[in-house]
Amino acid sequence: MTQTDSAIPDRSGAENVATPRFRPFSNPATGERIEFTAAAEGSGDDVVRFRWRSLPGGSITEHVHPHQEERFTIIAGEAHFTVNGQERVVRAGETIVVPVGVRHAETNPGSVEIEGVVELRPALHSREMHEAFGGLATEGKTTARGAPKNPLQLGATLWHFRHENRVTSPPIWVQNLILPPLWALAKVCGVRPYYDRWDSRTTSRLEPTA
Image 1: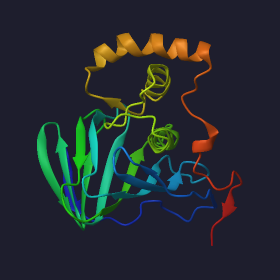
Image 2: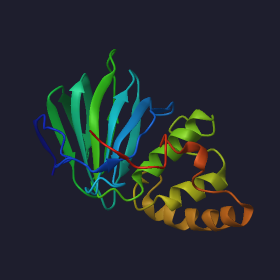
Image 3: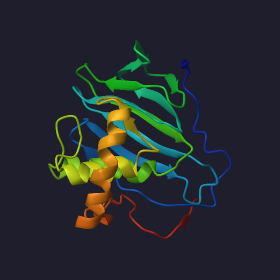
């Protein structure tokens, strides 16, 4: 069951002792722009949090997070969600929470950019997953839906991040048959699920916050 409520303050809790820095990056396939503000690295909170922008015409295909809750807090614009088959419109000042394992998709059919804050709990490897799909799309290596064109890259990346994200088409049971052999072959051929060039951290050193 989802919930929509008034905008909530940043839930990072007490002042962080240290935090990494991140550069923004885009995913041309989904029309998203992402800038991480927390990635469970020295934050004391098991969360991935990022500033999120969705361009007009942007679309995130239906998927589930098998082990994570996802929270969207909209700051500007109107985000159109389909959650468990039900359509929801979330406007500026509202938050929608997608529970663990619930299928959902998002689109921006409007003429203005959507701005918001997205949180995933627990963090798992969601930072690397978003960086990987954004990097592949930026390099022109994905389909219009954002899936890697190279079958070996498809197996390597989708299976590696299966605990963070599963698309719902084709059915997950079909993916469970197809992806493991591709993942194994990708390892033999040296195709990696994630490359360091996609890392959005501007420094690996943790810097104290003010």
